[in-house]
Length: 501
Ligand code: AHR
Image 1 (cartoon, helix red, strand yellow):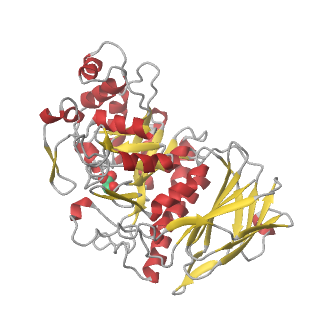
Image 2 (image 1 turned 120 degrees about the vertical axis):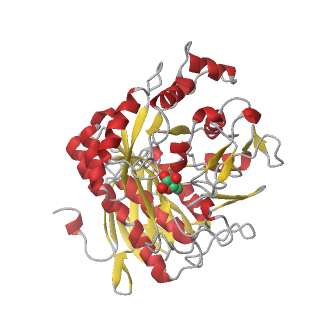
Image 3 (image 1 turned 180 degrees about the horizontal axis):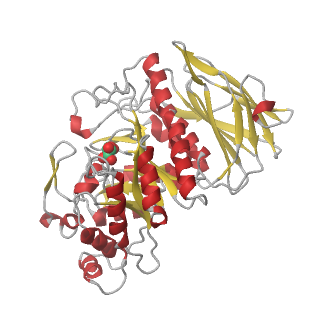
């Protein structure tokens, strides 16, 4: 009898602590930051002369907060911006760097004061891996090739010498390298066949210098464009190490009026969760195509843009994509991270859009002030899964029902870390009912359990500069061990982390 069929109707969770050997890559907990609105400028970069405490121009408070969640990687400089970015404009003395117009994002002046050196300094301060998105849309093969050489070559060469002239002797190590972004849209409106040919050409000249090994990531599909995945897998295959996927959750499903970040009713909440759960189907179907061409799963599926995208906050620049962040967004993030974990055999990286002040941000800043959003606290809870071993689980759960439609009320994920501790992350998406869960832990004897919970009074509660702790993590006392079973009372609209020793 299979695991699922042994379960009866009500909220039963079986966690198998004898794991199959799938590691949850820490890079699933990755980030994305673009030259867009106040993500880079104001969000990270304030300049050396700013009254905001900084290290070489980079905000100390933001670095500290992101180190706290063990940020594993940061994707930059875009997004759509990447395919208009010419990296040579962003090196050398800042006062002499040319200015450009940021056509995608508000038509504002980009003064290039944050460029390659500043980004790689940021990554060093964060202790995370850089993920650089190269310009295939409007840049040349030579330009991309020289960027790799500038950053990673140790010997005598025009680009390595230029880097030294600009103050950096040692090359940096850069592994993750994107070859174009959204080449089906803002990155050049290409067909998959045309893109695959261009990828092969550009990627040829992105060299591995010394012991630096690039992990080249090809532009992948927009949402359910399975033909894109099929064509790139067929025509590029092992020439890439990763293939991306972009999927944003639009609360209303209407790009023209996406819905407010903070003012929504339960029906819109339900629809938002239903839309975000589509990620499961997307990963399954794209993975199935990849499996046909790459049964050994050598090529990673890289979900390098995902998250909730709402209308901007009233009165803010529509091109800056500034939105608040509620308990709904935390629940959405937690559900997606559980889904990525479940697909960890194929999904090797995911990058929520866009870390600071843009879209589903973890951090909002206002001059010298900074606040941590509910989504930030999900990453704080979930950092225990980074590089842990995935534990297979089986869940039979109640439904969250509204207006004749239903969704599974509970989402779960489990892993075992290096020290042998088991962590289960649980989400109760039902905003009205507590869920009682009887959990069986197979292959382990639990003696100690503790927990943390993220919840709030309302699904649209959020943290503001006046009230920064409305949605926060507290201790969770609703998990009890009894007769070898773990009984959990999972409160409505909550994200819970359980630690078992
Ligand atoms: O994250 C905002 C934008 O969404 C990115 O620039 C682009 O890649 C995507 O369309």
